Length: 198
Length: 433
Ligand SMILES: Cc1cc2nc3c(=O)[nH]c(=O)nc-3n(C[C@H](O)[C@H](O)[C@H](O)COP(=O)(O)OP(=O)(O)OC[C@H]3O[C@@H](n4cnc5c(N)ncnc54)[C@H](O)[C@@H]3O)c2cc1C
Image (cartoon, rainbow over all chains, first blue to last red):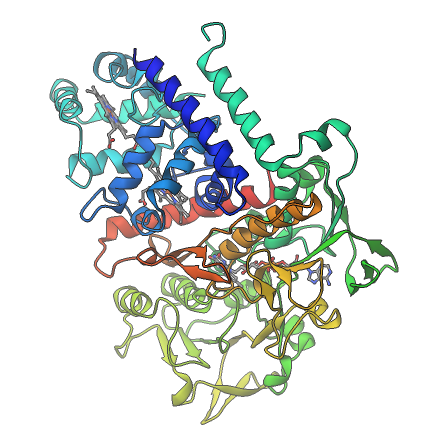
């Protein structure tokens, strides 16, 4: 059911962007996305070590993130809120469509193999439900974790825990349980697991 | 639908959309050239333009004329000067562009014949073009400082405002300097490339001195009374370098209080200011700037010394089918920066490809960001989003701005890390790989 709905949106958005582009006087999705490449990498695959990749991101997650950056007292950022405020909802929709269609190119990261192995187990128990396919899937509208830059994952988990970013209620429960069961090292293991994925 | 995997489906639609957007499927299938674009300068603007033209339409032939085998980025060169990174870490070659089919001609452009549509080179060739893109960076107004010229810069008093040997020279002079020395930095008047650059350099040098030659100091003799990220630099200097106290490692003399310099005596290491003379152990003069030399010989500049362009396409308003991007162009409100040059190059590349296909140019959208490092762990930034008002580029209201003054040390550390990520991403985006 969920998948079908997504396919439908994709079809609609895909169709829209083509017709929008054939009118000469609109900025294209490509032109907009090009401006992000200096920080996020060409077509949204970042070379790290910190700025997150955007390639393959879910349309809804992308739109939410941008709206949240634009909002007063929204999601904390060092710089994205200053950038996101430069775009209209229509422009954000164009970019969401564009980045969702790019392939996430995973670059080599330095990780601890032992921790990564532990992390894999923890992931299946605590996180897989909403971050499917080992965190590779974008279908949960929760951000792609597998291959995401580890520094970014550290920062964003720190933001979740310190109230700089709203954490989904159910995820909060899982993270708390994880830390209660396994101690503070557990999150480190998970991040190493995500960083280890190619 | 069930026969096609979801991922596959996306790729198909993605590809189809891209092709139909640009309308090149016919040319791609026919496999013949869609025109020849000659790019003067393989720096940030030129290399980005080449890569993005090829990405949009591989059927366009692209030639870059560039005298150097490698390009050294100016950005992060201040970290080479402070010893935080190696010169090789800011060196980039053209092999990735070549593997995309871009032709690199190791030569120096001496003139453009806009009537015949040819670029003349030092090596005596005439290279014909359908469209020419000019991105030569800046040239210096040596004549504004008596006693200073290219020879003095190459031998004794570096500007280090074009990276490479100049960067290494300044680094070596700092290393050789005794403790208790004075490093003079003389920033130029506006407009110039990288407005926060001289002050980042002062910070980076102070960082090096603090840890290696703590009795030394940096003296900034400025042509101006204010500069980019002023509040943030002042705050950072107070925090890290005791700015404003007797122990300050940095002293800044503003233009109206004697900072403007009129001459230099390389024999005595003296800088002659409008009010007094200053002796330095290491001197770094960053001269006033104008468009790259080729822009003058080709008649692309107006009386400001920079190249006026149609900001929708970056086509010169003086010569048809010649485009100017990067530092040499009048792209204001965009500042002269690497991020701007990269962003402008993409707008220009799309416009050039469209025009080769007889199509109207799209509507430009651009971004600029400049990160500066006050210490290796204290990063600050300025950012802005730009769009097009039908005639010229304008800032998008409500967007952009500076790192907040009250952001915590932890967040400044993040910005420093993001600055290094920016470096990795923009260099890959520009030179490929
Ligand atoms: C110390 C310093 C720090 C900086 N930091 C930042 C930063 O943090 N962020 C940022 O965004 N920007 C930064 N910049 C600015 C940035 O480097 C420039 O704005 C950018 O390089 C401009 O690109 P360009 O293509 O116009 O020129 P360039 O990148 O300088 O390229 C010009 C190229 O053209 C070639 N050339 C010149 N004339 C000819 C000719 N006649 N024929 C053939 N080839 C020719 C040159 O050899 C060169 O390779 C910094 C600059 C400095 C000096």
